[in-house]
Length: 224
Image (cartoon, rainbow, N blue to C red):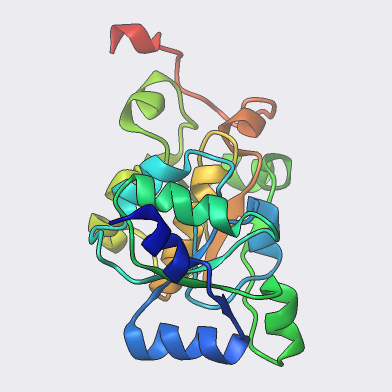
């Protein structure tokens, strides 16, 4: 569609009430594009995180199946037009507006806010070594095959929607990626599907490598 028409629709400032109504009545995807920590510290329940400062367009294309999907945004102040434009560049022209005032306006309206439980590798080291916690690695298969925590099971983010059955409904489980971006996406999707027992390891595999958590022998990625 013409970018001017896309921007006209996508740049509508929505009150919390309007935002909630569009999500409910039109089945709009609530897409939160703020930094990962901002999302984990407080977000609208059932919203999905794909941060604008990461691999934004590829992951939107990978995870949002229908390019006609109505989308409403929670975005950093002043970057709403950038987000609408970048969505349009990969075919997503059905942005219906953004939350005016962001998450602060949502809270001020008395609306419910959810969080993602988070930790770092050093805090789970002993429990992972003794096998008392479950760990999932959401990196690509090639990254996992190159080197991974011995006790981690690989569920690539790109395959998450097909592998929900692997995640336990009872008891906490932990997820990680390379540095925290993809695992935050995964955590948001899992929570939207009712897995509120997920814990995000925010420093990712980079942090795991700095602990005594047992790792597999490194294999050069170019040989895989």
